[in-house]
Length: 291
Image (cartoon, rainbow, N blue to C red):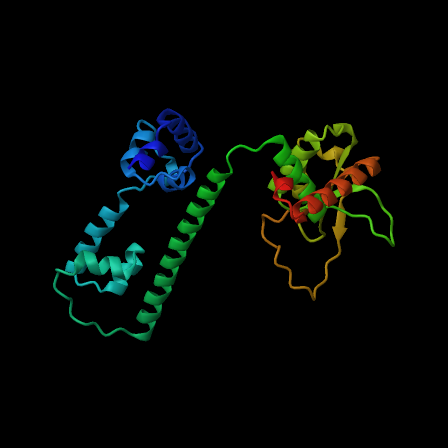
């Protein structure tokens, strides 16, 4: 007992840490695991007055679904039909309606059975998408704030994964980065600003398939990086190959944006050094190198 009381002796300090984690978007379970608080009463006191983050709030949809499931069951609907209508699991439906009379068994045509199966699969996909979005929101909340050093390391790693690199057989020490993801482009530009690269030395060019809407793509990328289309370098067009089964043919396809830094040989050498510095520290046996 004495050991347990000593664990929570600095209650105010523990509360400050708990409140800070809550405001970063962590759930009760995540805070409990961070602080090693295994007493729910203590956890309640630590978080008193702090509202839960939006992603942890559960709507009363389950109560509505239960009422609707019972209503449909009384109308003679089967578990399969209720599942398709509400997108709930059969186990939940069973618990909600098990006290109600079973409907008479219906004989379905092949078309009806296929339609039910298709709708059931669509309902599962909706549930999976909701779970996917919830996972993304929780993961985003776990990131918290990004320090300059963390952005620096992320930018070096991003460039070495996606940027042009000099080869032993072809020495080209230049900074050139290409990507089709607008968020990746924004992060890379944030990184260049962190390095205090002169904006006037940064050049942009669109690279896109010739059958796409080139003018729309140029306007999109120019707006995204905050320049006029006339400030773009000449667009590179990829020739159409009828034998290629292209997937990027939707209206959202805007090709890639290439970012070049003029006179970037010195910056390239630094990037190369930073990257191998990261590799060396990460692979070192001494854990102190990773603090």
